[in-house]
Length: 260
Length: 254
Image (cartoon, rainbow over all chains, first blue to last red; front, side, top):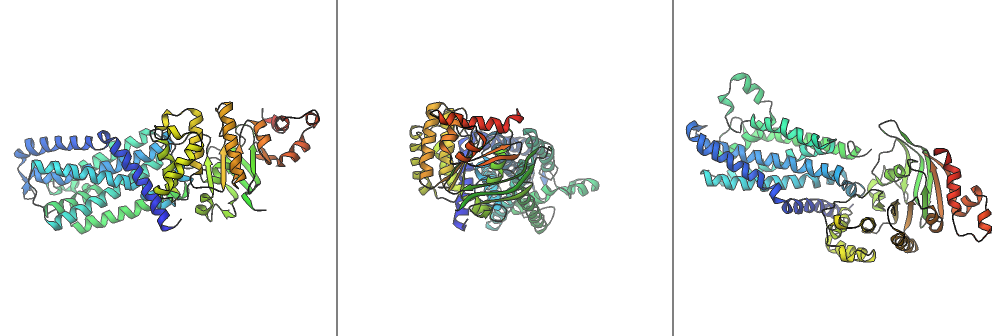
């Protein structure tokens, strides 16, 4: 395939997924927006006034980056894992792509692109809602960092979702990871608190949670302050992306979990 | 003569230990209408799956128009159009979108793929349904949609794995007529079917597979004369001998 043909194949996969997610927007965009609104209302407005400030900002402002990140990673992950699983098991439409000359890396790009787009759209919607509840003093540099971390985080979790989608043998395999792995990692990664407010042993465990680095890098873009260096956060993200791309490439190239 | 599909000593053992292919060798000449016949579970779909990139082989060499599927998978795949045994499109999509998107996976721009898809769908009698949801199509229409999808990138080699299963007689005849016109335009067709009388009339070459091994292959005439008793042919023969030959060669599997 020429470069243009590969681009057309990639664009076809992305377009198909984006059309699908807008067609069923009540299922794809609305739930995260509703959940985030409740979080802002309960944790920010009701409980936040009692908690006071954290890292020098009011609690509502402190939780905004974590909640936006939560929406991004959950949507990027579930979109890719579910879309891939559905096309593999229910409609078997994955065969349309497998028989085509589309190279493995274009397939990976095509499948994760939809997850990244959905993660970014939902993240933007949640961010807009957050601005109704609190004032966040954003700068141009800060917005650039926020966008970069949001994009990289969406990429990481879309790739992770693809690994899950490829390897899952049943619908339970798709639901178990977000419920029992992803959600605890997000909640214990510092969405609602600063790591410095934890006992030492818990801090040590938190440093092993990849979500902690994502949330803190993102928070640094919003508030100019975080528990760890943003460079360390970016390094962890880059390592995760490289690892997950390698795993996905191996799966698609060898057909593991895809071909008999 | 150019070879559309060349298979040498192809073996496949599935993860559960089932040996599907025990060293199959086969050549499909370019421009041919080739029948690959065998009872259920003989290995036909496995051969097709390996040739089209849907199944991993255990060992052996497969080439499509001289392009090894391991060394040049993209070039080999670009030559093939596949109509699989099972319905494998998203039922929530429109037929036109399904066919146009398939063109996209082969690198055909939408502005080029859309009129091509419309023409194919019209030719296959789906013109009025191209903007309905695919789930609303009848069984025969779904089969024809799969043919349109397989032809969008104008493949040189069309693989049909039981394309007429569950299709009524009239539609089946229409589909055969359409496929016959494709072969006259130079497209090579590999067909698996359980309608042996139709295969006998349509196909120039045939291979019969049983329990993962080719038990007969050659021109249709040669197979019929080598394995049949020829008695029917003398008395105003109108077809049916292939079924006898097929049963004779595969009866031990029943």
